[in-house]
Image (tube, rainbow, N blue to C red):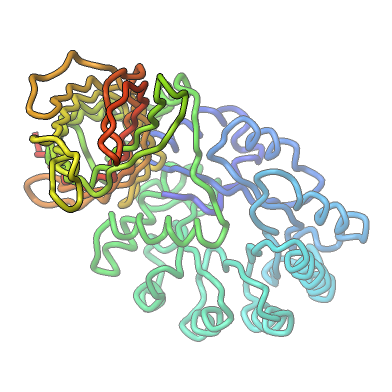
Length: 476
């Protein structure tokens, strides 16, 4: 899940901000966007995104502070937009409920910041309260094909929704959709998949059943659950589509590496996350623990042969060789998965053929790999999960029908993805991966040249095996 709007830099979180972030992470929130209220108080948000690689921020001047939007402060907004991990201009917009600034002052500040967003190539986060017509009119007048953004905490009707969608904007929903007073379920059902997102607007808009308390990002789950109920879909589908929409709009990138200590201390577990008065139970949207399944793929064997007598080096490759095997995995933490696999491959392209290979051998070469390593899951709570693999392998080779040679080591990196398909009796996980096996050390053996001459050579070898896997994680 992604909380696209949480004011966790405000003073309401000064006493326990790290505990709040820990609860959010434990509840399955993989990213938070921190919008600005005023450009003059951004030091806390800057520090937070520096310390936590899963946090992002926006910069801008809220309509409550439109009167303060001098040329100097607007210039500061534009300069700040170039900072690292700034993903939007916001929150900006119009608020006619309060009178902290006149409509004219708000219009001017809104337009100027929209133009900043277009110049720097960032989306806008729009605040709208009792100002539907003017908000859309200004966006329509400024829309030149390069402007996009989100109407946050959306509580308007179908006409506003349809006009916003036509302008290319996204919608985000917060805890007010769970209130008894909410009467806009037609908006919740009509907004198309891929055009709406989740938010808490923390510390405000606390969802049912926690009303009356301070809101926080961990409670964004209740917004997703309510949307799933109203739209007659699953919680998993809401999480998947809203996460994809947020990543699309804000161009959020997956975290490529996280320090192991941070993962172990902050990674969600199947235990409940405890707070002083509240308990937010973490439920993994795609629970995986122990799985097993099969592997198939085309093996490519690449050799670099150095002829000892001549000192010459030549490459040689055999492509499209079938490989198949089996794997067992154990997800011992939400971002870490231990894997053991066996793969077999038979190279029949070295076998004698009177036309294609007149100097070939009588029997194929056979390769056996026993691999062990770990997968690091970049986004473990999504339907489609990307991961990196690193490990090692033992390899046994039988050449020309001979006995298996002594085991040789391999260094084995890889990258891949898999798709979670939950069922009533467990999780099916099809996937694809590109993995390399670098055989160590070099091998010394005789080779036969294309003219039939036989030479002793030092040979370095690696195997490139694009793999297609299907794992099954039973319910225990």
